[in-house]
Image 1: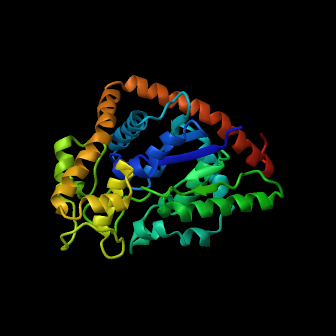
Image 2 (image 1 turned 120 degrees about the vertical axis):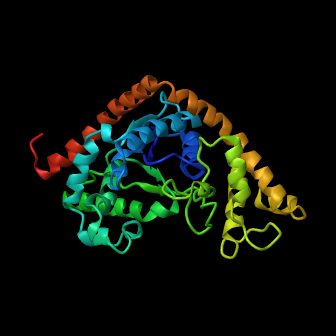
Image 3 (image 1 turned 90 degrees about the horizontal axis):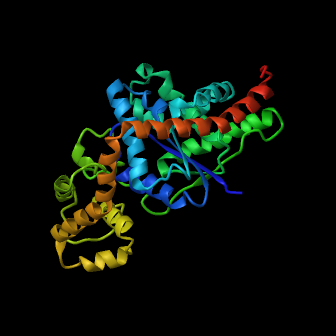
Length: 330
């Protein structure tokens, strides 16, 4: 019996190279091996102020990227989080057993809320509980995540433990954390200490998957490096050039040693030119398929509804199990 894997990307803005290398490409590789659930986290998206048109475009665009990158809807379950109402139902049940202190320790909330935590919405604070529900509802064996989500996954495991101990039986499966070795955390092209992000004000901080070839060349050409004139890898002292090398390595699948050796006497200009071409070679087929799919919204909606219907079968079973243990009438 295949093990179950679950993952998703928040439905805000355009998906970028970091999403592809950190998540989506890996999903494509494992879709034959596991029983996979991949979703668009649109409920998480509204924890910040987002225009209705932007949310809608992000959902449809995100799905188009999933498919264009190679996910096969006949082999994996692809759906929008909001179309499976059981996610929010389980989240409420988990909210009622999760200690407040656990949520106060979540670093991502502190980072997003900043110094004015009194004005942020409750949804942002309880975001990790909904994330736990997203995972536990499908009894996932493994969850592929980046290092920045590891704390949330550990919370998910803790919440599952609370439920299981409370009712003295394993109702919710405690998932394993699956962290990819390479390409998990691609950084901003403007600041090697910040993760590449859809929410960054500067569009030149990221390579969007729908960027055209000329724009990709411009962004890589303007990508921040440092005052040194040679290529070397050191994330501590040279975060920007190390980030570009990570991208190069992830897309070319060449070793760091070989890449660095190839550019020892050529400087940044040649390195950046070649890197841009490697990115284009990898992303152009995805972009072309994405544009084709975005012209067929009827097909995209069909995929979403089919995936949600399939997901709800597993999700409703889990929710009913948990509700029954609480004493609700099923």
